[in-house]
Image 1: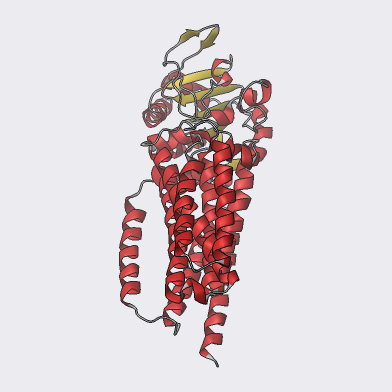
Image 2 (image 1 turned 135 degrees about the vertical axis):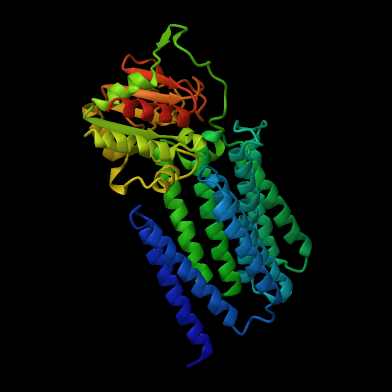
Length: 464
């Protein structure tokens, strides 16, 4: 058999593992196995590529494998689950950079004059999208990490300027494909693309970071697919297309969950980290909040028939997922039915809460998405809201003037009692006050989420 045919058949096997892996990632129960299948497919793809006769030297390839393996192994062990969104943002950025470098490398190897128009167009698009993904992902990383403000950073006419840059880049890319003799055009495309990545993400507020991460993930896949066309590598084309399509689908799901359009997310300059009122009982204007204690909350939970736990980013910050599992286990021993209500955009990346709870070995069958759990709130005795804010704000349904009006939220206010675990009265990523905090059936449990839950667990044990 022709060796090239054998390589293509092996690529087909690797692609099959990718497809099965992506399919299994659709359920928490099979996600781990899906990740393993996809990793096996990638291992097969890398191994076969190393045996390809087009490889001229292995020195740099082996060095890259060794360094990459060390960095990946250390990151997998050292990075906290709370920092996973930042790590994903970096992965997206490096993926985009790799695609741009592959396109540049092919251009340097063959020379632009020796390539046809199709190859030159794909090289330009791979560089354009890869560079935008690279710098955009690092801006997203900075916003998530906190050394870049979560508030939108804008200047007059920014959206029009960005649109003009996009049109200009597409025009330059096309002109480079027609007139490849001038390498200056290539470097202009790369430089402006790097600038565009910064300008596209910097005006997006912290509230939209889950959508941004998902979109950048999709762009990294699209860039990889274009790089596959540059190299004529079917494995890279298909794997990149899978990532790109999956990212776009997830981006659409995130936008629907926030009742936002993608154009509104990119150009809307929505959300930010704003200050809020300090903690404590009493009146704020004409609104009154009601505080509770660990002992009072323990009594309410222990004598409830059903308790729903709603996690948010505050749970991740406090690293309280294991204590949440402990509280749930104590309640279940007392005969209380415990469920978890997960909003699609809770946390700072899609599936963030699911990953945290899975780390604490919370049973998959206790996790309910928004559409599943909303009908159960009227029959729920107590809802424990841990670090969630915008996703439980009734203003999304009652206040047409609110920037989150129309956003699907968890209907926690329909339960008999809600208890919000929060450090203070500060607003969430959307930067607005939460009407839930002032309802008569709501109580505030101020403090660090982990310490508050530990106190609740202790109070529950004292009731035995």
